[in-house]
Image (cartoon, rainbow, N blue to C red; front, side):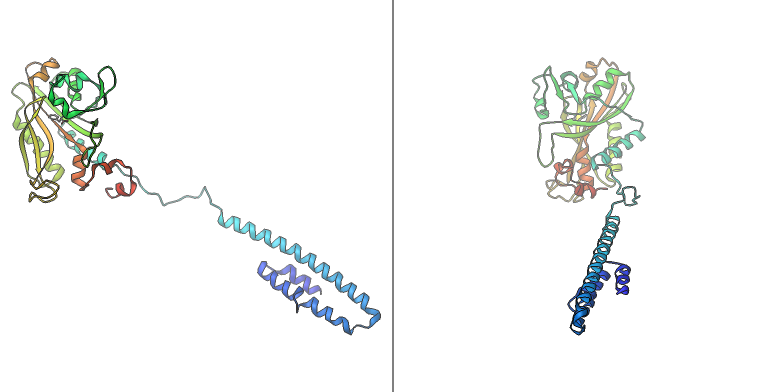
Length: 330
Ligand code: PHE
């Protein structure tokens, strides 16, 4: 019997203890075998025999239960240790963030013009009528205002429809010569495949003495810039209209999708419009009290550039915050 007590105490885990249980208390276990011997015990000793055996049984059971509880507690402790999350543990698996494709495109554009000595200016997103329209030769009731419908506050304040008001703010703030770009968010009442109510523009303005700034200068820098952005593309200037420039032009690049052959994206023309530009209208200089100067200005939509560079079909997808989509452009 002693050895059975030892067996119980030496069981190293629940499984081993279970084997001991079967060997002790099972149908064919030790106790059953011992009780079976009863029939061979002389009658006068039977009572004592049974009493001793039952005492053993009780002791073994107590021993067994105590051991079982001990082993279970230990197993639980082990499991808790194994499953615990070590919050102090150092993890080497981190994923790096990346710039949003629009910001990345904006940075590249700013990089180009910075290298050409253009200063970076910021204006205000909530503008007044004077800076956004009036000083840009867009008087009230001028039909060209219809192209830039936006969101109005009271007192003729509005969300700026373009970055051109930064031209006015910069000219009112400093003396010529000026060489600036103005990147930033602008707002219009539009929403379709290629328009969102908020988007980004980059404005450019160069002002110097009369006769120092020509359309040829403008043409040179924009061609150089577009080749920097899209490498090998053809560039063409088309006469156009903006109230704040005269003459004005829209600039196209040969379609980056079909290389000018004609496809769905370029509406089978082979060309994609990418920016507006022109020679600064004298009325604009008058509005800011600049005399004897000449200048050129240009403006472009950053999302449009990002879409062409990354071949994105729906502009709105850029603002849905879908990580899976954005990760493709890292
Ligand atoms: N502000 C014009 C627009 O939003 C773009 C532009 C800027 C055109 C400067 C000419 C000169 O459409």
